[in-house]
Image (cartoon, rainbow, N blue to C red):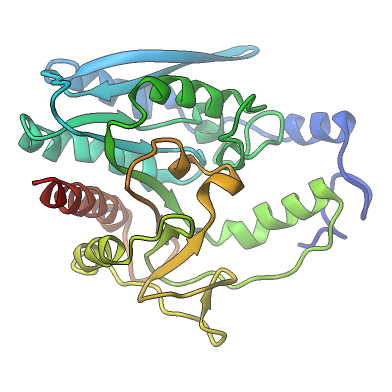
Length: 306
């Protein structure tokens, strides 16, 4: 599929409200946020504090937004932010965040405060999509006066703690559907030509070009390499069109692009990218890779605070 053959809109013309409405009408619920996410959060309430930091009213549906916090929060300690499901279709980001809390969060008690928002975009989670109902990408919308309710709610949660975060890990995936659906849809939405790309086979990280931390990124890569394979560079020395600066690492300008990983002000930030469609990786490995990335990132940041 290309922007010329995408079934919505007129080639070369950006979408207006009518095209967005047609696109939204084509989306259908494929899985349950309540069953997959909220039930897990409920099981964690006995060990962690859970806060509702907002809700999304997308008639006829209403989605409460929850974050999980360390029970014995201590303002004297540094804070780590973990976010998942900014793109709702990136499954291991959601379940990796929840698995980290369940299996490992308690081991950090007394050393770091944890704030975990496991499913930032529940409407998109249910529809296995990248965008919210307005055909907006939340991970390009973390900016002042954000048009994306998902992004605005998370920024409001995080804002009082800016300057106290030591690390932020934003959990994502790169999937085959990026090329088969989402990038053609993006080109059609914006009235631009679709330029085919190459999906990397393996895990990689996105560092912040405005605050590069190469040793931190490599520490995370080393931990994940024990779980699943790291994506190689393509023939151009790139991953998804960006230069590979070290094994498995590329760089984006987080703040300029309105990315989630820009919101904490932490010195150590990264965006993970798991490849769930690889024949060399299972869903369990993808979740475990996200967990390994979170643990390695927190461990690295805490070691540098001492």
